[in-house]
Length: 116
Length: 115
Image (tube, rainbow over all chains, first blue to last red):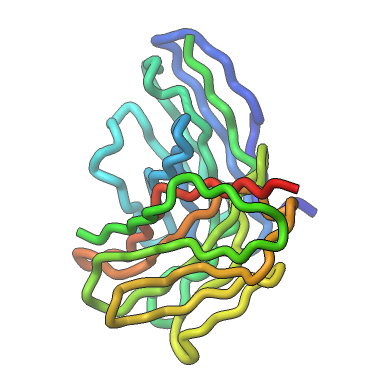
């Protein structure tokens, strides 16, 4: 069984379009994340979200918005796509530890977004 | 602000050579430390982690890392690499920042093992 799944795996679209990437985890974790990995493999956290709060990386444009219908899902919606949004987007989840810190993150397979 | 530095961007080794990848972080409080590996075309997966206790941590596939608090370092080691270790390796730090939990990844080290 896939622990963290994402759809679609590949997404090719035109500038200015709006698109969504879906993420689901079946691990029972209470925290989910979105990461952006650029062409140089640099990995940057975009959002973390649990049933208590959404933590936004302040460098993320407000065209990006996470939407969580329930604890097992965290979708990423992107408005007005730009060329610079081309990257691989990874969803991840983890369990919060007793001390409030984050345990191991389990990553999804990634969604390669290409904006033309 | 917390940051993570991986000084080795690209490492090329022959099979059976020993490996050490550097990771330094800047944060003065309590940290949780991780090494993740990303095989070509795949997602990140955990190699090992440190929360507390013995600073020498053993992970999967013969990897280990040592937490040296005084040096703010968490270097990854393997005594004898294999061709299948060819991958991108990421160090990550989780700590509280501004009242929130935050995780920061290093820029990654690409390891290429030559048969």
